[in-house]
Image (cartoon, rainbow, N blue to C red; front, side, top):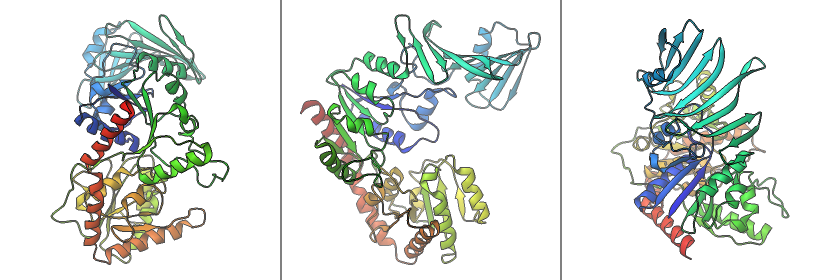
Length: 501
């Protein structure tokens, strides 16, 4: 039996979906289940193994769609600059190294190869660009050998990729991908596939799934149909990671699903089970299936994370606040910054640390600068927070939509007081109003940003002006439900029931 988990991509600043998969991997490994994590996106900047291993996946657990059709294994980058030089059909007249780049020149032919290193100061090459007479001709991508090449041609004064060639270990061609604007064609020795949907369908067929296999889909938008149609005899489950419908656009007659789930909800007769992260979301979804589709699909509640151990510090930093998330607009870190600035006027000793990376980092730093808040508000980047949470007294969440909220769970595991908006599903799972923190009512369409920020600031002031030892103790009590042993048991039950009942 194998449990296959399907996702799109992975990055240095991964989302809660990837972290949820990692938690799942850890629990299923401990139960000696065979797990595979499938990534459907195309990766061009670096070896996928660098990203998956950085997050904590094992190499033998990873299947990359594009590499699956070759005999090259998922492995760390070990191909060196010297390895590359030995393959060149040009003489290297000189070379220049600059941080994570090495440039190999042939001055006679006006040709050079630009090597992008995995790490500065080490010779391992992630990719190389081949340039002749000022024009990009080809890019090669490596792990322990050359994995694939991209070929380029001039188009409107730019280099445009028109073909990718994927190799086997011995250098033979496994298949080619031809690219024309938004269309892709995949050519094998005995088969031509005319879209990525067909490519995914072919891949699913080659997995040769049996009735002993389980396929768990974490993301499926655009590829749900080929996955469903080619799942074979396996059992297929859909994980719900976010708010699954639009409340404002839903009426008594029709429900507007989140586009990521529309196909898999509309075709519930093809789905063996769904997984919600909270009981509340399970309840809402179950009621909606009955109301709008007159169906009663199997829905399990399994939190997307777990707590290995409760962490109790000797001391917490007084008046310390933490938040942790992707630095994305929907996380509303800007509201939190403004709220702390406001609360600081009443509680002068406040300090606020923001952990995470994302596209909003520059804008958030600019806001901190404008508020002259650098002495007490810090952007601290992506950090392993397991041992860090317990240094703080209070966790802030600015998100108005969380399917679960891994950082919320991790925070209560370290006994933090909690403040967040009264929205389904994460906040109301981990925050019990006036017991371990404060839930703040919010209506974005009717409240101004100033009102929202003032409400947050008031809650912060209220927390620190009261004895919050009881809040810490209550968070520890809530955390017990999410201990790893309890969540592992839920997975054990799911597997047993899905395969044998």
